[in-house]
Length: 415
Image 1 (cartoon, rainbow, N blue to C red):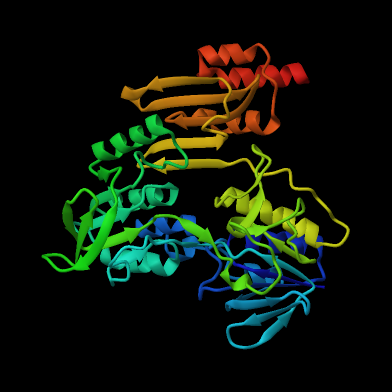
Image 2 (cartoon, rainbow, N blue to C red):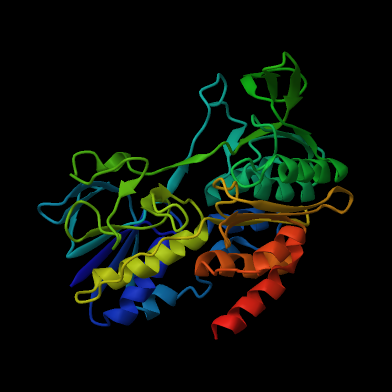
């Protein structure tokens, strides 16, 4: 049996390790498109602030980890899949046959279609190679513009601020992290960053970038203003890596379409992670969740289903984001924007504390929090267990911070 995994990120590595446990005698091969050992993109900001060396970004710190597990790691891009022949075409012209295949190719950064994005001092911050380039150019005192204040943008933001650059963040939406936080909490994060010395411009777009002036780049904005910068970093979103699947017969939409077992439209081919349009726990619909916890869950489940005789149905992943922005912890879970039911909120603007709960009947279905780290695990547990709160719903409507009491009381009642 030859299990092949395309993609050397968290989904692919977790899947390979689980396959080895389930199928000790199988051949397991990982193909990664980058000339790097498997690493975590989430660790790049820590590399930028020199909290970790390059090796600290690696998913597994032991250099012999994959050899010890008898997992082959190849640094070569897969160009094409022939599902009928169960074969892969590699960038060097060779082919590889498989028995079971997992596609875990992740995402790629998306740049807005504006003039100047191709200039030398405009970078994404997505690969380890990007991290090296930014570390070289984002020196203390340099002027840096960060385009995008989403989840990835805010992680990069902190590392840039610690590097001592003169930082301006530009976000097209009316708040920071708009796909994770509502207007109140998103703008509290903005105010927090501004108090830490970061210039944040929301409801603002970069219309063009050109060379010239006293610094390397000159930016123009949609409000008619301009500014100069040494470096521009683009963090305006990602999209699944599915272009190479053309002609493979694998059905795609936003990502790769899968059944409840993470199998694609082609037999013996599975998908996991950012590239997979998997089941969302809260909505029951299929969507791409480009977050690392989902990637790890997908990798584990896909491996189980790739081994003959093991069929585990995917119950869906809870949409979950936890973010540290310059020391301020924010989180969102499930249907954090609500679905038409009741809501309860604590708003403490002066102390940067915010908590909003969303209900359907007496079940907690979503939450948005800021500055309240003690509630993170409980909120996820209540949502994922679909616990009926009974009389505790009214208590949470009056004081949403009592979620731990509600969780313990409901758990005790069920026991």
